[in-house]
Amino acid sequence: MSKAETLTARAPFDNSKCDIILRSANGVNFHVFKLILSLVSPVFQGMFMLPQNMTQTDASSIPVIPMAESSTTLESLLLLSYPAATPNFNSLEDAKVVLEAARKYDMLAVVSRAKDIVFAKFLPTNSLELYALSCIFGWQQHARMAATRTLEMDLKDLGRPNSEFAGMRDISAFDYHKLLIYHYECGVAAQAVGESLTWLSSDIFSTSFIGSIMCMWRCSLAHAEQCTAAGTSVRKLRIAELGELPITPWFDEYLVSTGKELYARPCESTLRESASYNRAITTALDCSYCRYKVVQNMDRFRTLYIAEVKKVLEHVKLKSN
Image 1: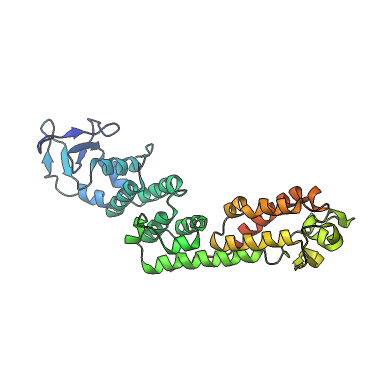
Image 2: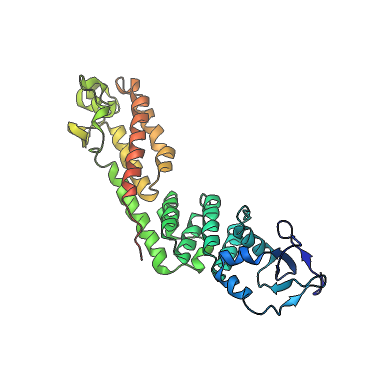
């Protein structure tokens, strides 16, 4: 396409009844309405109040405003400005360019819409980049949302981000340090959940007979001689209203292992994916007492364990500026 050649944008920006044309940097004409853009952007509103001595089209007297943005960016920006239209961002980089353009033209409503679209689409795969983006734009609530998602990353990996984390070019050392501190504090809080089971609700215990107590401490309490997994060293742990009770070594190993894993990755998926879960059950099957209850009891305990980890993590705050 030569310098003089232009194209008309696709619908809804091809309306011949428009009262202004925005021409992208690569020569695509967007037929739009001043009223709509004036409502979403004080910058455009002020621009339209200036004398209309811009380039004129050959076929009509509709003013043409040359824009610095590409047609891809301009189309997404305008779709976000129109009430019944939504852009489809092909990449997070494309979305970031649009957000920068929206900030340039002081389009607060557009920024808000784009933010929600971007987080819905890219949070599962780009939590670090979205944390950086949130810090740049001052989105504190969304920064917390992205920071929480980064808990699925190992702390040592978070401390050594790879070259693909483009957000490092824009984020401040202070905001990055806040993320590391948040991840560390969440890891400490999650690991502590398995160090004392006082948080267990009393409704998991029978009100009439101790036989319904979970095998991981019931076996060591009354049937240690039957548990071939018991070994020679039995640790005691404070368990809800029951006080300190001895726990089976296979359950002890499970708590220690998952505690270390939670310190590195304090999230639900750590407990659901932990190899120590199946290892504990396999070991317990060697016990003539535990084998009948271990699958049901461990499934029930893991559900409670996950719920408590989530609960304590809600109390860990990402430090504000």
